[in-house]
Image 1 (tube, rainbow, N blue to C red):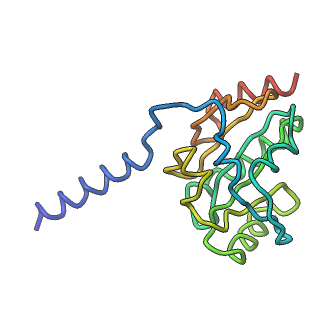
Image 2 (image 1 turned 90 degrees about the horizontal axis):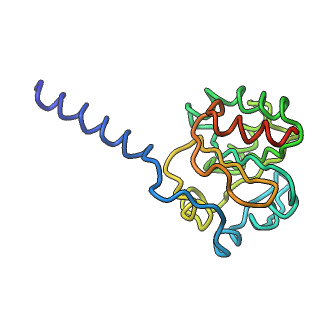
Length: 172
């Protein structure tokens, strides 16, 4: 019995480590296909990720991929919102991976995201955008520079120095 229990813990630990594995290639831009992925607004309108990003040309953009069912996401949500207040020149875009429109809207309200820029991946976790960015864990943050390039590709906590450094640059 101890062997089976120990093996179970070992397998769970290995799976957890694999889920958070950093991508081997840190991409600096998006593919055309990734930018054709549709997202939905709280009002039910659809637009592509390319359209979302075009709205913020020449701005520093923070993409915050999250879900209301994700305990890790909720644990750092207040930090993420605090960053959006501290760095008002940066555009914070919240991309939800909730499983339904109603769960997403409920999560937005519960966690104080109503009124912020929010979109939902109706297609779910496996979609053209998330596949392109090698999404394997949430929360996940990405930062786009004022030139539209990906300045930070793989950030999992809002207090990571690379994220803060890019936000400091946006405030100048």
